[in-house]
Image (cartoon, rainbow, N blue to C red; front, side, top):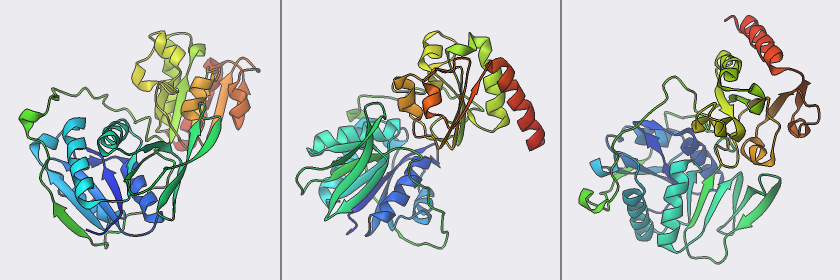
Amino acid sequence: MTNTIWVFIEQFRGVIAPASLEALGAARTLGGGVTAILFGQGVGALAQTAIAHGADEVLVADDATLADFRVEPYAALLVKLTREHAPAVLLAGATTAGRDLFAAAAVDLGTGCLADVTAVKLVDGIVHAVRPVYAGKLLADVTFAGSGKPQLVTLRPRAFPKPDPDPARTGAILHVPPALAEDAIGVKVVDYVIEQGQVSLTDAKIIVSGGRGVGGAEGFAPIRELAQTLGGAMGASRAAVDAGWIPYAHQVGQTGKTVAPDLYIAAGISGSIQHQAGMRSSKVIVAINKDADAPIFKMARYGVVGDLFKIVPALTAEFKKRLGK
């Protein structure tokens, strides 16, 4: 095993996280061979998906102890494999699982972890990256001090292009045993509660968000309808979540989800620094607000000053007409 670039492949119930495929694409730009790390139960078929998206080989740990993501068995195995094979760089998507896993592994390996980076390159074997700081108002150039230790990096979802799959690619698939037995793992997964029919905020190409300006829980009805019409996800500001109008799962911002859609529509959101931190990387921002001086207009490409309860339904009607819905 000579590959020096490793990529952790996150999966849930047999579906690979888009951020992991983006990480494979980023790994290919660093040069050299790429090894994918795939943990789970009944996930062997996903190895070929990783190869098709850029992996040269896949280390598969297929075991009941790895069926659900738990940081203890995942980190123990990642640390064990890293110590045995000494990769130079490990990449993962900056998802909840990716951040949790790499933070724990970095501690055990006695190394650093660059989190939520939006650009990455190798210079003489040392990672140089760019990451947002100060709630996204500045971009910092960051790197690792010293050498000889594995360099752990998590990549902001949708900051890197997902490679087109090549079904003709071939690669080695190697099986490895787990590092911990079930009785050595202190955390047990009892159940999952999944919002059915919802588009993931992190993966969404289009997000329509509502804020304090929607006035209450019922005010999210036009926001939801526009999001559904566009095939996007519904987001919210912290103010709306704190008011109990919408669940925390929809919160965008410094204390919520960090998103980077192609289109972000902010309706009734003033645009605090904390909210901007979560959506600043959006490619096109559209703001709808009664207050012409709202901070959100300073970062929006398109702005509409007016009543969201008139503008949002009008947009929905027009999109339905254009999209034939």
